[in-house]
Each structure stands twice: as C-alpha cells, then as structure tokens.
Image (cartoon, rainbow, N blue to C red):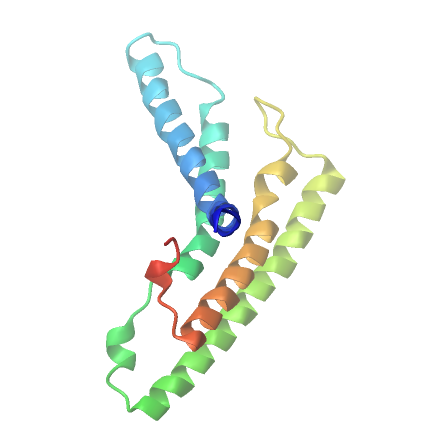
Length: 169
C-alpha cells in the first residue's frame, strides 16, 4: 500500500510540475515588480533589468499553466450556447472543437520551433542580462507538448467517466 502512495505522489508531482513552474514564475514576478516599484519611487534607483525578467516570467506563467488548464478543465469555454443544441449536435460540436484545438496547438508547436531555432541561430539575447531569447521562448514548444498530453489525458478521463476534480485524491 505504501508503494502505491509513493507512486501516486510521484505522479501528482509530475502532473503538477507545470503548475509549480507557473506558480514560481508568478511569485518571482510579483516580488520583483513590488521591489521594482520601491526601488524606483522610494530610492530613486530603478532596476534596469526588471522589464526583461517580467517578460520572461509572463511568458513562462502563460505557457506553463496552459497545459494545466487543459488537464483540470479550467480553460475558457462558452458551454451555454452548445447546450442549447440537441445531444447529437453537441457531440459533433465537441469533436469539431477537439479537432480545432489539436490543429491550433499543433500549428503553434511547429511555428514555435521555428521561432526558437531563429533565436538559437541568431544568438539573440536580452539587452541587460544577456539571457538567450531561446531560453525564454523555449517554454512555448515544451508547453505545446504538455498541452497536447494534457488535452488527451483530459479527454481520456472524460471518456472513462472519471471526474477531473478528483484527480489529486
């Protein structure tokens, strides 16, 4: 029994790794922004590099949390309109939406690979901290993979009739 708990907790850690990354980036963003305001307006000595770190944090927050939104069912959805249709039409719309999601995320993945490759080839870095843009935007293709995995995971759980909310139990 203890082995199953360890295996389950490891799975929970892996499943929530994206949320942890987004959470850490959010904490860094909030703390540094707060400190930046104090440094600028109280001490008159702003952090010149703050905007670069804020950009990095925002990119990582959005893309790290995107896969988790699929997994937990917390993405934006307007179900009110779909629910007005008969069940057969609702199923058709659900399949159509799933295809659109797969195509859009697949397209984003392909385009983001090219985008990151461009940054790698050019060696472009941020002005103040010299952080490679490929490192900052490298989160996007990784996020696309996580979005697809989480999308299919959520669809599998939906198909099996498993409640997404009970996932952590």
